[in-house]
Length: 487
Image 1 (cartoon, rainbow, N blue to C red):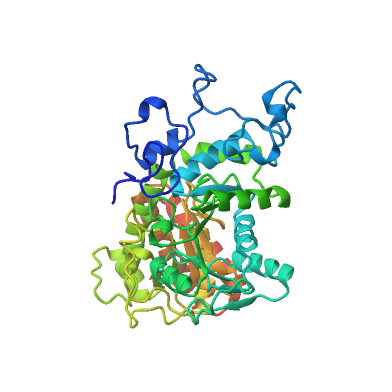
Image 2: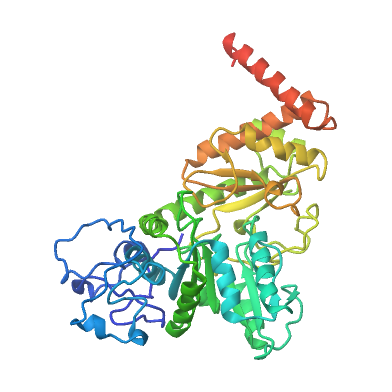
């Protein structure tokens, strides 16, 4: 696991040209803080204004602010001199607001660019399209919500062409701009795509590369280092980290470009709320601690589950219950960045999806670790696999059957419930902060329980009603055995 030591901070400006924190204490000028330290101090208030201010940021819910007196310098300030990143005064919360400005300072230091926040991740995706005004958008798979957001954008243009991510890119022109939308790691699989490869292709065509990096926030990866022009996050997920806020984030490298994004956001009316900004600021303080542990646990779980898959011919299983699971073939496939690179002969042939990241090794691109979210496919395709996958999330104790990801609690989801195009057997796992051993034991028990249910109702051909009857019967038998002291 790589250190979170960053080279992006340097007094008076960043070494690599990215945005440096603006509000570190003056006595920190000769220090080079790590990422985890920047998350706590990049938004330090000006102590000359209030040397005895609160340690924790205030919750400020006001939408409007008092006007400056006519005799003051602020009253005479021209509108075009208003600094949206460090406002001289707030006017109306749709423009700027204290919690939002502070959280954008932290995000800018974190992402190595100029960050603008939005009311949701889909607001942020739409903002990217609106900003670059593409007539051609190259993309494939990934979060279906972004695809729908781009379709909504296309309604405003009347003629937008969608092409495959690996199709030949047409030359980008002022009348037909090209946007390459790269989601990596990929939802729901957690597989990584080669950012530098697609950056090169996009730039050769004169286009822009925007990376949806939601599944791997810093300290796991920094897409700007691989040539991305724009980085987007659904901050609802890992940035928020507590399943209690909606927010989106877009970061670009140029300050004037960020100002144009802010202007569009202001007049589309899509900034995050004041309370959401405060909650996000609170959550970012612990980002590295959370994400590093989640990544480590997810990697261990993905590699363990891969040993249970018969496609993994080199696996050596020691645990007797693991041997039963592997022999059953219930684990049809496991996808995760830590299992890459995978050659063309080691791809998921049962999903019907085009392989992603063939032969790509993401370790250099993701020095901080792999995505804490990944997927497995329960065997059986449209029939038994779907029934097994439907019941698996409801056999767990510590994994919560729910959509979304990135929170401190582990979530498990039959993905077809959210995305109709997914294989019914696909299970998405978002790993939280529980102990690896507990999550592993819970999944092991759930897989064995599903196999028992399958056997109790005759091989999965009787539909959901028979599965439920088998579940009730098994629960009654386990309860009776417990009362007899047998379990």
